[in-house]
Length: 395
Image 1 (cartoon, rainbow, N blue to C red):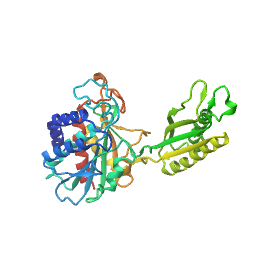
Image 2 (image 1 turned 45 degrees about the horizontal axis):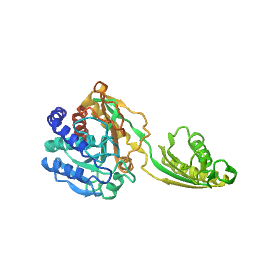
Image 3 (image 1 turned 30 degrees about the vertical axis):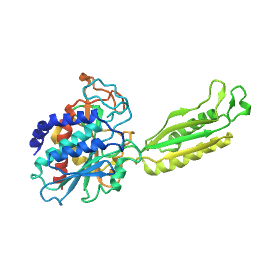
Image 4 (image 1 turned 135 degrees about the horizontal axis):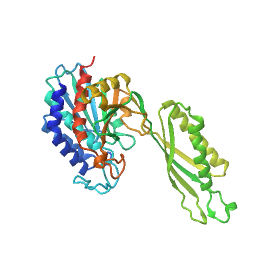
C-alpha cells in the first residue's frame, strides 16, 4: 500500500502543483472563498467525488468510502482562505488580486488535500472505513471557520474517530515532517483598549489628564500579568502592536487607542488573565484621573494534539518518510482554529517542511515573500493519504 501511494502521489504531482498555482494566483479572504469553493468542488467531481457545498457558507465536505465504511472514520482538513497582504514574489503564479495573498500556505493545504482525495479515491477498494474531507473557510479570522463548520455539523454524519490537519512550516526543510504530542499551539485573544483623558496644550499639562502617560503605565504594568501572575510553567505572551495617540509635539490628545494580543496554553489561566488585565488597566486609568475601556475578544482555544493519535501518525510518517526526516516540534505560540477540532475529536496537527535555502525559499508565513518548494506538494498529498489509511487500519 505504501509504495502504491507513493507511486500515485508522483503520478498526480503535476496536477497538484497546477492546482496550487491556480489557488495561489486567485486568493480570497476569509469567508469570501466563493470561487475557491467552486474550484475545489469541480476538482472533486472530476475524480468522481460529489461534495456537500455551502457548509458554513463557503466550506465543503466530501466522503470517500472504503470497504466496510462504518468500521472507522478519519477526517482530513484543509483551510482555504488567504491574507490581506501585497505579494512581492516575482513568480508566474503571483496573486492576481492586489492586496490579497496566500501567505500562510492555505493554497498548499487545499491542493494537497485534493491530491490526497485523488489517491484515496483510486484506492478505496483496498482499505476499510471512511475518509471525510473537510475544506474549511476562514481560518485567519475570528470566530474561525472551524467553529462555524462544527456548528454546521461537520463532525457528525458520520462522526470521525480522529481528525488530521497539515500545515506548511518554512522553518523546516522540504522533505521534513514535524510532530508534537499534547499541547502545541496557543490560544489567541484580541485586545482593544481606549484610554480617555483630557487633552490640551503640551506646555500646560497641569490642565490636562494625559492619556499618553496613562497608556505608558498600563502597558508596563500589564506585562506583570505574564511575569508575576502566570505560573512559569504556563507559556504566556502579551503583546501590544498598535498604539494611536493623535496628538502632536505640543498637543496632548483626548484619547489613546491600543490593540494587542494575549496568548497562552492553559484555558483556566487564560480566563483568570482576562479578569486581571481588565481590572489592572481600568484601575490604573481611574487612579490617574482618566478612563479605560478594555475590550478582550476571545479567539481560538489552545491546540492540543491527542497523544496516541499523534504518536500513531508520527510512526506512520517514519514508515513513509524515514526516521531521519521526522522531527519533534517545540511549543508554537501562534494560533490555529484547528484547535476547535482538537477540543472535540482525537486530533493530530502536524507540519510539512517547505523551506529550500538553495532556491532562496526562506521567508516565513504572513510575509509578502512567502513561497514554498513545490516538491512539498507531492509529499504532502501522499503522506496524508498514507496517514489516513494507517489510522483506519490501526486498532
